[in-house]
Amino acid sequence: MKNLILIGMPACGKSTIGVVLAKTMGMKFLDTDLLIQEREGVLLQDLINKRGNDYFKKVEEYVLRSVETENTVISTGGSAVYYPEAIRHFKKNGLVVYIKVSYETIEKRLDNITTRGVTLDPGQTLKDLYDKRIPLYEENADIIVDTEGMTVEQTIERIMAQGNNL
Image (tube, rainbow, N blue to C red; front, top):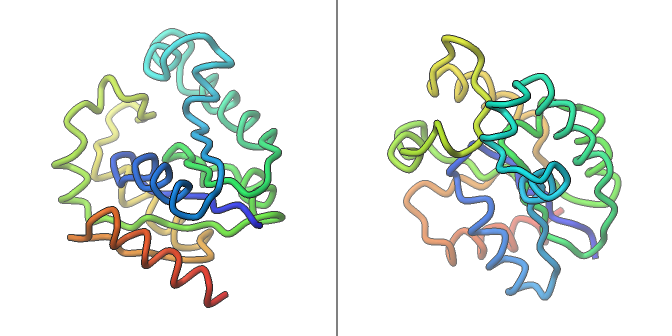
Protein backbone atom coordinates (compact mmCIF):
# COMPACT_ATOMS: atom_id res chain seq x y z
CA MET A 1 0.00 0.00 0.00
CA LYS A 2 1.26 3.44 -0.90
CA ASN A 3 1.78 6.16 1.65
CA LEU A 4 -0.62 9.08 1.99
CA ILE A 5 1.28 12.31 2.60
CA LEU A 6 -0.78 15.14 4.08
CA ILE A 7 0.23 18.71 3.28
CA GLY A 8 -1.42 22.00 4.18
CA MET A 9 -1.31 25.02 6.43
CA PRO A 10 -0.69 24.75 10.15
CA ALA A 11 -4.03 24.07 11.90
CA CYS A 12 -5.69 22.65 8.77
CA GLY A 13 -6.07 19.32 10.58
CA LYS A 14 -3.26 17.19 9.11
CA SER A 15 -2.35 15.46 12.36
CA THR A 16 -5.91 14.95 13.57
CA ILE A 17 -7.10 13.71 10.18
CA GLY A 18 -3.94 11.64 9.76
CA VAL A 19 -4.37 9.64 12.97
CA VAL A 20 -8.01 8.79 12.26
CA LEU A 21 -7.31 8.10 8.57
CA ALA A 22 -4.51 5.68 9.52
CA LYS A 23 -6.82 3.85 11.94
CA THR A 24 -9.63 3.72 9.37
CA MET A 25 -7.38 2.35 6.61
CA GLY A 26 -5.26 0.05 8.76
CA MET A 27 -2.12 2.06 8.09
CA LYS A 28 0.68 3.40 10.27
CA PHE A 29 0.84 7.10 11.21
CA LEU A 30 3.89 9.37 11.21
CA ASP A 31 4.10 13.07 12.08
CA THR A 32 7.26 14.68 10.70
CA ASP A 33 7.08 17.58 13.19
CA LEU A 34 7.38 15.01 15.98
CA LEU A 35 10.35 13.40 14.18
CA ILE A 36 12.08 16.80 14.13
CA GLN A 37 11.41 17.32 17.84
CA GLU A 38 12.72 13.84 18.61
CA ARG A 39 15.86 14.32 16.51
CA GLU A 40 16.66 17.74 17.97
CA GLY A 41 15.48 17.08 21.53
CA VAL A 42 13.46 20.30 21.75
CA LEU A 43 10.04 21.61 20.79
CA LEU A 44 9.72 23.06 17.28
CA GLN A 45 9.21 26.61 18.55
CA ASP A 46 12.24 26.34 20.85
CA LEU A 47 14.31 25.11 17.91
CA ILE A 48 13.20 28.08 15.79
CA ASN A 49 13.73 30.56 18.66
CA LYS A 50 17.18 29.25 19.59
CA ARG A 51 18.65 28.22 16.23
CA GLY A 52 16.65 30.35 13.75
CA ASN A 53 14.50 29.66 10.71
CA ASP A 54 17.42 28.71 8.46
CA TYR A 55 18.59 25.96 10.80
CA PHE A 56 15.04 24.72 11.28
CA LYS A 57 14.52 24.52 7.51
CA LYS A 58 17.73 22.49 7.05
CA VAL A 59 16.66 20.04 9.75
CA GLU A 60 13.13 19.83 8.37
CA GLU A 61 14.30 19.10 4.83
CA TYR A 62 16.73 16.46 6.09
CA VAL A 63 14.02 14.74 8.15
CA LEU A 64 11.49 14.83 5.29
CA ARG A 65 13.97 13.39 2.80
CA SER A 66 15.03 10.63 5.19
CA VAL A 67 11.52 9.23 5.79
CA GLU A 68 11.47 5.63 4.55
CA THR A 69 8.19 3.87 5.21
CA GLU A 70 5.32 2.07 3.53
CA ASN A 71 1.61 1.83 4.23
CA THR A 72 1.79 5.02 6.31
CA VAL A 73 -0.21 8.22 6.62
CA ILE A 74 2.41 10.96 6.94
CA SER A 75 1.51 14.34 8.39
CA THR A 76 4.07 16.92 7.30
CA GLY A 77 4.83 20.36 8.64
CA GLY A 78 3.16 23.23 6.80
CA SER A 79 6.44 24.22 5.14
CA ALA A 80 7.15 20.80 3.57
CA VAL A 81 6.28 22.17 0.13
CA TYR A 82 9.34 24.43 0.25
CA TYR A 83 11.53 21.38 -0.44
CA PRO A 84 11.03 20.02 -3.99
CA GLU A 85 13.39 17.08 -3.39
CA ALA A 86 11.43 16.04 -0.30
CA ILE A 87 8.15 16.16 -2.24
CA ARG A 88 9.69 14.08 -5.07
CA HIS A 89 10.91 11.61 -2.45
CA PHE A 90 7.38 11.27 -1.01
CA LYS A 91 5.75 10.94 -4.45
CA LYS A 92 7.92 7.92 -5.32
CA ASN A 93 5.85 5.80 -2.95
CA GLY A 94 2.77 7.79 -2.14
CA LEU A 95 0.00 10.21 -2.89
CA VAL A 96 0.27 13.80 -1.71
CA VAL A 97 -3.04 15.03 -0.26
CA TYR A 98 -3.56 18.75 0.25
CA ILE A 99 -5.90 19.46 3.17
CA LYS A 100 -7.41 22.75 1.98
CA VAL A 101 -8.99 25.16 4.46
CA SER A 102 -9.88 28.85 4.11
CA TYR A 103 -7.67 31.54 5.57
CA GLU A 104 -10.46 32.54 7.95
CA THR A 105 -10.63 29.03 9.39
CA ILE A 106 -6.84 28.85 9.80
CA GLU A 107 -6.83 32.22 11.54
CA LYS A 108 -9.56 31.08 13.97
CA ARG A 109 -7.80 27.79 14.75
CA LEU A 110 -4.26 29.13 14.98
CA ASP A 111 -4.40 31.11 18.18
CA ASN A 112 -0.99 29.81 19.28
CA ILE A 113 1.16 30.82 16.31
CA THR A 114 4.03 32.01 18.53
CA THR A 115 4.30 28.65 20.31
CA ARG A 116 3.34 26.22 17.58
CA GLY A 117 6.56 26.10 15.56
CA VAL A 118 5.43 28.12 12.54
CA THR A 119 8.29 29.69 10.60
CA LEU A 120 7.51 33.30 9.78
CA ASP A 121 10.01 35.66 8.19
CA PRO A 122 10.50 39.03 9.91
CA GLY A 123 7.42 41.17 9.21
CA GLN A 124 5.54 38.30 7.56
CA THR A 125 1.92 37.91 8.62
CA LEU A 126 -0.13 34.73 8.74
CA LYS A 127 -2.05 36.00 5.67
CA ASP A 128 1.25 36.54 3.81
CA LEU A 129 2.27 32.99 4.67
CA TYR A 130 -1.10 31.60 3.56
CA ASP A 131 -0.96 33.46 0.23
CA LYS A 132 2.61 32.27 -0.40
CA ARG A 133 1.92 28.61 0.37
CA ILE A 134 -1.46 28.00 -1.29
CA PRO A 135 -0.06 27.83 -4.86
CA LEU A 136 2.69 25.45 -3.64
CA TYR A 137 0.17 23.13 -1.98
CA GLU A 138 -2.00 23.09 -5.10
CA GLU A 139 0.96 22.53 -7.43
CA ASN A 140 2.39 19.63 -5.41
CA ALA A 141 -0.84 17.80 -4.53
CA ASP A 142 -2.03 14.64 -6.22
CA ILE A 143 -5.37 15.10 -4.44
CA ILE A 144 -6.91 18.36 -3.16
CA VAL A 145 -9.53 17.92 -0.44
CA ASP A 146 -11.43 21.08 0.48
CA THR A 147 -12.43 20.37 4.07
CA GLU A 148 -14.20 23.64 4.78
CA GLY A 149 -17.13 22.94 7.11
CA MET A 150 -16.50 19.18 7.07
CA THR A 151 -16.06 16.84 10.02
CA VAL A 152 -12.98 14.64 10.35
CA GLU A 153 -15.07 11.65 9.25
CA GLN A 154 -16.38 13.46 6.16
CA THR A 155 -12.85 14.52 5.28
CA ILE A 156 -11.60 10.94 5.57
CA GLU A 157 -14.41 9.67 3.37
CA ARG A 158 -13.52 12.24 0.73
CA ILE A 159 -9.79 11.39 0.88
CA MET A 160 -10.55 7.70 0.50
CA ALA A 161 -12.96 8.30 -2.40
CA GLN A 162 -10.55 10.58 -4.25
CA GLY A 163 -7.60 8.28 -3.55
CA ASN A 164 -9.42 5.37 -5.16
CA ASN A 165 -10.01 7.40 -8.31
CA LEU A 166 -6.30 7.73 -9.09
